[in-house]
Amino acid sequence: MNRRNFLSTALGVPALAAMAGSLSTLLAACGDDEAATEPSYADGPNDVVLSIRYEGGFVPMGFAFVNTPTLLVSGDGRVFEPGMQTLEFPGPLLSPVMVRPISAAGIRKVIRLAGDAGLLAAPPDYSLPGGMMVADAPTTVVTITVGGQTYRHAAEALGLGIGDGTSTPARDNLAAFVEVMTDITAVAGTGEVGEPIPFDPDRYRLQAMEANPADWGEPAPTVVDWPAGTGVVLAEAATCATATAEGVGQVLTAADQLTFFREGDVVYQVFAAGMLPGDAEC
Image 1 (cartoon, rainbow, N blue to C red):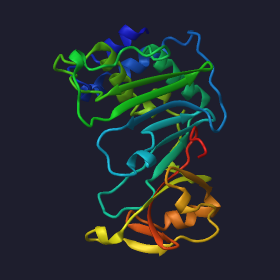
Image 2 (cartoon, rainbow, N blue to C red; image 1 turned 120 degrees about the horizontal axis):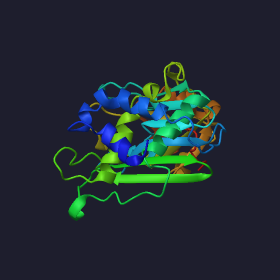
Image 3 (tube, rainbow, N blue to C red; image 1 turned 120 degrees about the vertical axis):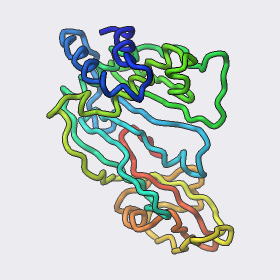
């Protein structure tokens, strides 16, 4: 299957919202091409084969720092996805992440689908037609690393214009791939992906910003002392800090979004996330 056929199959309906009916056809067609030469991929625990994430847009303070991929496939055979979140506020400080195993055969199917979509190549122009700009729209970023090469496809306001004739083939194609990848089990094949469990990270990344609890309304923040021995000095973590789960895991998992931390005479709001494959040390 080539890129043109991928797009026509995946978008053989008026809009991406109706793509579910064509998903099985698309995946079956991809499975017919077993003889195609496939690029290799690095299979270490910190190697990332595929990442899909959203960057930028109008987001609250600290969101960009803790933003995690909507899908990440690591070379050692794991799939990471966001866990279920409620609308309760304040919720947990740490956003839930789920992880499940994926077989080598399943990863190869993911790579094959990316190749069928034409994404194992230099990115085309993903600009909105006519120089259109969308204020505060996030950018969808699809990153694939195979054969010693990394391909990064980034499109602002992806999905805008599909179905009304104001999109472009390149944007439609990337949107189709992202939509299909929302069902990793269908892509990899039944039996190639295991059941999800909560991710228990070995390390965390943190960002601390000075805050005045008096500036907040109700519910008011709860201020607790930042414990000694964490390996992190909040005064030095304005940009980024990393620490072991042994050092900060307990204090972070016990905190919620309105737990502020006092270090010396200064109060900080902390943003934190478990480190995923590919995340760099600060």
